[in-house]
Amino acid sequence: MYKILANTLFLGKDIISLPECHSTNDVAMEKIKSREAAEGTIVITEKQTKGKGQRGNVWESQEGKNLTFSLVLSPKFLQPMQQFDLNIAISIAIHELLSEYVSGLKIKWPNDIVHETDGKVGGILIENIIGQGCLEFSIAGIGLNINQRFFENLSATSLANLSGFDFDKWEIFKLLIHKIEINYLELKKGNLKKMYQYYLNNLFRYQEWASFSDSENFVGMIIGVQDDGRLIIQKEDGSQNYYAVKEVGFL
Image (cartoon, helix red, strand yellow):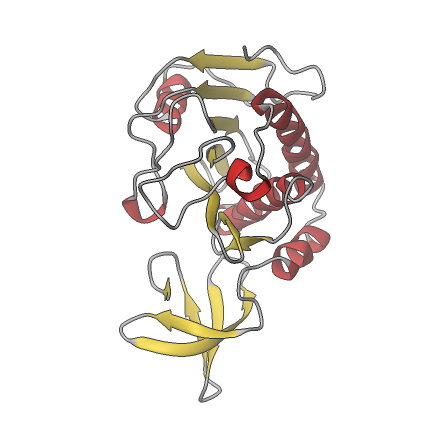
């Protein structure tokens, strides 16, 4: 089903399509270590048995209904402290494309795609291999709920549920890889400012008072994201707090 992509320069010229695997990120990591994958390689599967999400969560995906794949990138132009820039480039590519099909989508820090009222549509997990002062390789694992209608996790939804009809997964996949490649090349040129602003403009709960939790529950407002990816939340007393992944929760 998944052929070499004709609409890209380097992404998807090598596609490893598996009927089933434990985790596409793990397979991609194994392929890198055995030198069977290079920048642009994509590992994709119809059934992922141990898909990984943020905070050690398992990504739920019904066989054949969704998109679950990993991109192999070699962003040696990024220093380890800049790794969140890659997260921004990929997150906004996904948000931009899926927003052409349904409205009301937001990017939930650090890297989920959610509907503002109906739940999570997709997630990204980027794992990096750090070389000498740069990102030697990055594996961007992406899970998108496309045609799945029922979820054990009631906070999840899909394009099909939001729109009322099914989609051509292959067409979405092709368009998405093309958008990710465009953003990646812009990132390589150093053109992050516009992407960062898009990320903020579409960030879930940005500049809205809402409930969060760190060591205790509190009311705060997201006012930005630092260069290293830490979320900046202003509390009601006016103080600004900086949170890395796993240090703050949305209530």
